[in-house]
Length: 458
Picture 1 (cartoon, helix red, strand yellow):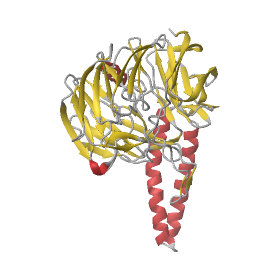
Picture 2 (tube, helix red, strand yellow):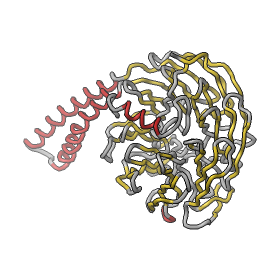
Picture 3 (cartoon, rainbow, N blue to C red):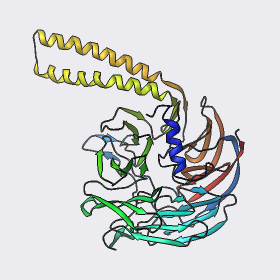
Picture 4 (cartoon, rainbow, N blue to C red):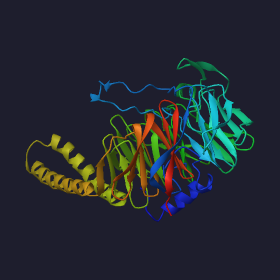
């Protein structure tokens, strides 16, 4: 993952292309999808307001099969959970979210929960809007990207991304054959998104002029869908591909650089040009270094928060903190040893007897011992581990780590894992956001809870 000396540049990039430091202008705060707030909150929190949507979210996908019989994998994870809640974004005292149930964009007063305005699209809105320069950028299952005035919701432009306006049935709704399910990334004069989930029909990676909505360039991919929040670094775009593995593209023209290896999933996080994604079939996050396709390391968990000194890992049953740099250094040492041991095992299958086999066995034994020592050292990289029953979402606000689970939100100390506060929520908390001294929790029932921090940390 990114080294401490590179981290400030990444933070500056994320803030420069978004909004004020106290805002939360896109999903997970920035285009690295870091989940790290630009302010520090101290627990406990008090109840603020509660917004209850008339309709609960209607996810595009209802979850994984119970097992993968071909590979004999059971208790599968759902790898497409990008629209299980109405993820809120907050800028200049206003909160925005899109609805997959009634096809609308909502704007609320972030301090009171009072509705300010709504805007209808022609299809489900499955991912959070992005707010930039006083405008709301959002995509819809109707196949269009929209730009709205953030203050009053009036449409500035609408651009159809597919080659024609062709509708098909989807979740008992009529949607475009090229739905927009990546969110929209806005950097400088361009807005980036992708339309299409059927590779045979063409999936269109697109750059739009932010002022006019004019298509500046499009790249068609015919082998992978585009589903999940798009990410961006200085030079690249990263497009999750549903249950498949993410695609890495050039930000300049959308041309493909590579497809990374892994087990798929729509959750993804960037540190520089290094990618962490999952959760795969069994709840595993894979880490892929810049300019490589294969995984350097994997982590048993659902989400991760990255800071210069530590990473925080969230699994179904545990919350933990680890020395990321040391862990990955050990993983790099492990890579050539594992590769050599794999080759030796192949050679041993061919050599059944003799001195050569004996030498191979001696070398394999030494390599196995080295791998055991490295694995032990990797486990010692964890600074703390605590039991946790909140596996669904996670954000960081200063030294307060906040997790979402089943009908609850919990705050922990990032220093030692101590539980600091617990709050109730109506539904499964798949969405968390922090802005202006408040914590927002969004649930599977279409409910948004606002909690107010005791005070801001100085």
